[in-house]
Length: 419
Image (cartoon, rainbow, N blue to C red; front, side, top):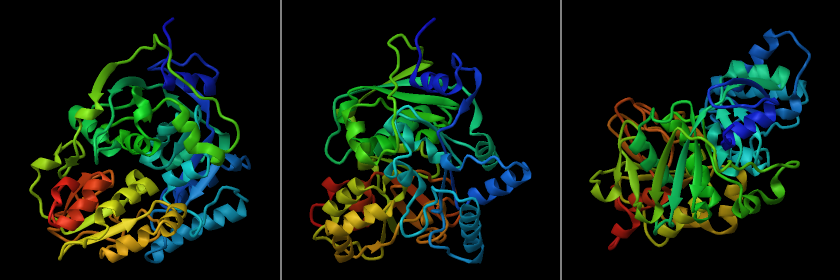
């Protein structure tokens, strides 16, 4: 028999079967995550099962989409999650004030770790592949099944091998890499497949890996998995919960295709409306903007905030432009305050909020009016994603978002001379 990919190994370890691409296995799940939108549906479906079995230690409940509640309906959703957590004594409930965007919290709080199998009722659960986990999005009904059994069925995905060489140039990072990959293969180019990263991975920071894995789903991918190395171990550090076992691919693992990228040849990239696959170099852009949004589960980490603050420091947001800065967690916000980054953004004329998904899903806290244009460090730019159906969202990395806020149009930091 040939060797195995990381995805095949993790599913083998968790199912007790010789899991191979294309097979169906039933596997033990390490953690299942739900948020304030998907959680209430899962709670109701769990109640229908009529069982007293509840794997509460494996459940993670994180309100984040409408935090704080924006109206009566969202307040009712939040209350339903709060009540479920209290009644069932769920230990992993993260109330507003000590929480953040769910995918940031899953890493910060040590649930995501090498070798683990994690599911979440949110499509961007694939984020945790950055720390060598197999994580993927599921529906609320499936989440209810995991609540009751601790298990779920999986189709073992084929894997695309992505070979990297070199290192990123100035103002280029993980967001640019994943936008380039999605542009190359399309939004369905990895349907029900996993990405697995090889080569000079030591030149890609874990925050950049998180951005890449987060958007694997935008190419249809089930997961985006990186190897566990010294950078991984240092990043999860003392936050990780329990023991973990890193997983690496066998040398003779079988891949369905191979992609190769020289990181040194990548340049700042932007995806035009209305698909993440509609990417092109920023230098070719000539787009006026109304809003620049720095945040989300893709690029709301402290490293992204530092990049943005470095660029806007001593400058001012362009007239007629709104810059909205949203840290991905309470911890990130504290770090921003400690490092003086909040003051930098405020002095530049930006609006800084507490952690929330908010405008990323077109919920609130910065949604777009008809005909308005935004450049955002978020993960999707579908029609109406951040507001009106006739608004326009351009996806880019934190450096481009910050530079564009200053220029009033989509630019790279290198194009800011004179601003």
